[in-house]
Picture 1 (cartoon, rainbow, N blue to C red):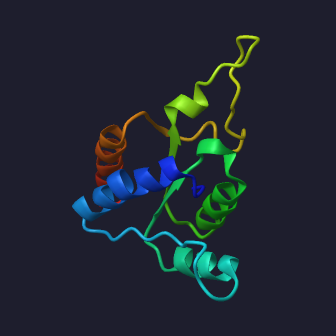
Picture 2: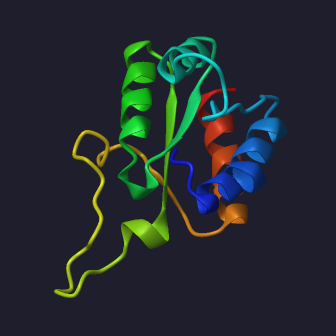
Length: 129
C-alpha cells in the first residue's frame, strides 16, 4: 500500500484489527528504517503466512510486493478503495484502473474502515485459516 494518510488510517483501523481478530499480527514496512527498504520488504514477505495488498492509487510498489509474494506461493489478499476505483473523469469514463494483471483477481473493494475490516476477516477466515 502507499503511505497516504487515508491508507495509513485504513491500516490502523481496519487491516491490523482484522488480522488480529484472526490471530495474526499485521506489520507494515515503513519508510523509517536503516538500510535498503527493498531488502526489508522481501525479508518480511518471506516471513509471512499471507499478505494484504491495497492497490489504491496504483502504487507500483504494491504490485511488486504482491507479485513477489505470489511467486513464493503466498496467498495475497487484494484490496482497493472503491472511491478511487470508481472515480469518473470529465468524459464520463472511469479515471483510475487496476493493472490487467490483477483486475481479474477477487478484489475487496471498500468504502469504510468497518467494511474493509469485516471483509478482511471473512477473507482471512475463508482462505488462510
